Length: 382
Ligand code: MG
Image 1: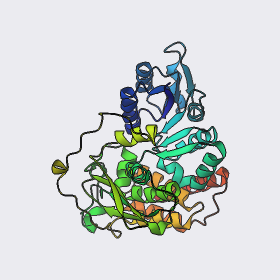
Image 2 (image 1 turned 90 degrees about the horizontal axis):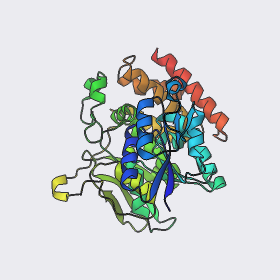
Image 3 (image 1 turned 120 degrees about the vertical axis):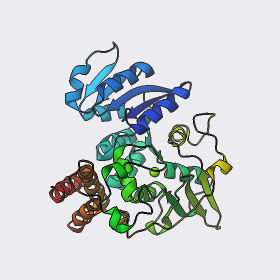
Image 4 (image 1 turned 30 degrees about the horizontal axis):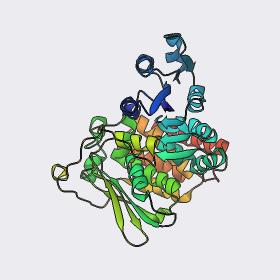
């Protein structure tokens, strides 16, 4: 019996990697639903190739010409398409690779419907970690991370018991500006920010890796996924991106997960967890070819977005949602050439400074904080 899978954000970088994994593992998994934001042609091509029974386009305008490309395929347009795909009765696992805050409602709906969510959309946990955990408890769903660092942690703690994990060390490549002097950093261009040294990813997360806002999002994500205090989660820069995370246990033992950078392994593990299945999609690891592995401290003065994000996590309530929203708006403004690189962190700082966090008890409060932060950030970027 194969398990039905929905891929949200199937035309993006993670989505296409996920379809490659599912293609190799087609005896175990069956693609049931696919959604994209606006790439109608790509989505139709993917649906034909995978035999998906439902496709969804979030952007209504792009969805206009998509009608009836194949009989028996349900076509949905608009943001509701995400929730519909995520709760499809034939779907057991939802791979959520939607970029940004837009993926939240689908995650909540899937968890309430008892599905496994293979989560590549870390913004979901950052915005509303408590609500996401509550939805999983209530609906019997489970969250399995697709983020490489968190997948590494999950693999390292497999077989250990609750309370045995003492500390996490998440690695960061340091991004393209790891060793840039401060004065040069503030003038970094879009082109330079998009040149990630070790990972090929979409533009939003690549800029987040250049500011290290991505690492702050990952610290918050780890806090919710593994139930650790912020004091027990550390970040270290590791330029080779070979060691994805280190886990320290109560007896002082440290385990690490190692491999050449590839998103296909975390995707596969999220599908098969806690089992492992044979697969040949990831390059064979060769410690000699990997060369020396080095570690260095994160330059907090050069990458202020990191501390701002972790501090928002510590403040809790709606603060992480505000950090996430301000960051999204600032990154978009930077990519569109409206603000310089240094102003991404500047924008986040001003918006967080004006925010009075509320407990993130229901979705309305979180969404209101998200909207408020976007408006504030837009004001800073215009
Ligand atoms: Mg990551």
